[in-house]
Image (cartoon, rainbow over all chains, first blue to last red; front, side):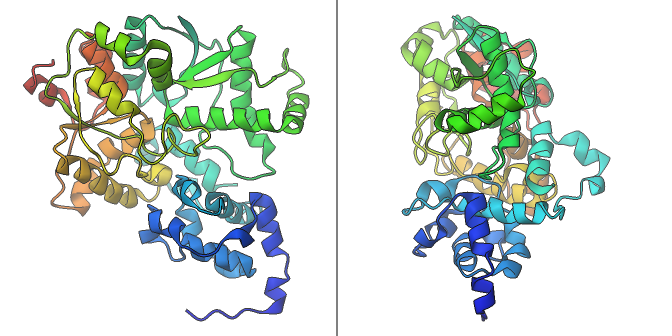
Amino acid sequence: MTLRISRSQVQSGFTARVQRLADQNLMACYQCGKCSAGCPMAAYMDILPNQMIRLAQLGQEETLLNAEAIWLCVSCMTCNTRCPKGVRIAELIESLRQVRLRARQDHLQVDRLSPETLQAVPPIALIGSMRKFTS
Amino acid sequence: MKLSYYPGCTLKNHARNFEDSTLFAMGRLGVEAVELKRWNCCGTVYSLSADDLMRQVAPIRNLLRARESGHDRLMTGCAMCFNTLKRANNRVRSRPEDLERMNAFMYDEPLDYRGDVDVLHVLEVVRDQIGFDALRKQVVRPLEGLKVACYYGCLLVRPREVGIDDCENPTLLENLVTALGGEPVDFSHKTECCAAYQTLDKPEIVADRTYQILGAARGQGADLVAVSCPLCAFNLDQRQDLTLKRHPDFLGLPVMYFSQLMALALGGGEPELRLDFHHNPPGPLLAGKGLL
């Protein structure tokens, strides 16, 4: 993957914004990759959790906000409990979702769910999904 | 012992088998679960945004309800409710300025919340208040010959500060099964995520996870998987059809709540176990072991 890094991206304020939303110091990450190694969703992700941190450090807003991976994370907290630097990766991924959701860009289209699905799933599945994937 | 009790939405709907068996088993153990007179959604998932105080209001209101009724402990069985309530509680306890703002927002409540209610999971009550020795003495139908893979999922053990046991290798459920006379098996996937609410619009991921998790349990010779989260239960049990569709070599496995195993060992029958709520029916297995 070729990554073009421009000064304007790095200085855009995006890094500071997600660090503030997540209340995390992303610069602590030294790319050991333990978060991605244990992630139950890694097999389905286009960008892995450790890559998300690196991209966030470099202000790569567009790549991150368009990644499918941010909608795959279900905050299982495996990465958070294993990070040797105490970086809370789940909080970073939540902050990326929040940037999209606060611009009213919902991921889950509730009106497209079939009545059968709505009937079948327990309320916690529906509410959990709506709280994480809709504004 | 009287304990204030928060059921949560799903125990009143899809997981009646969880609630009925919990109340029966706890009753047998001398715990009277007093359901809150009024309660609201716990929020289901803890909000991870630093500035999202609004989402902590729902769980904190429930703690206020417990305080209102004169209790300083609130027991719940659902792993999602437990995690959300306890994390919200931890947050306001460690950040008084947040609590202040929330109390100001909830100005119409007769009481302010002071962080003085402890959130307990049913399993903690069994381990810490009742004790496995006392439990063993109450067992009338030991689960002899029943091999159980104990599945904790995420929310009982992560993050560390709310977990009820070690986050990588918890043993609470295994100790419970042993006390009930059953045989816990080694289980590599005991804290592996089931893909949770992805079940709504990406059920195929849940099916893949179910394939791996139940496959690992089978590989260890388990007869069934014991769970404590209604969403894990749904994913591992109700998604078995889809799992088979995606993985033709998948062999299903019954999934039961830990509370159903307790109810069974403490003398409960069909009315308390509510086996009609299961997709892969545990009845034949239990009957085959002479337990039903």
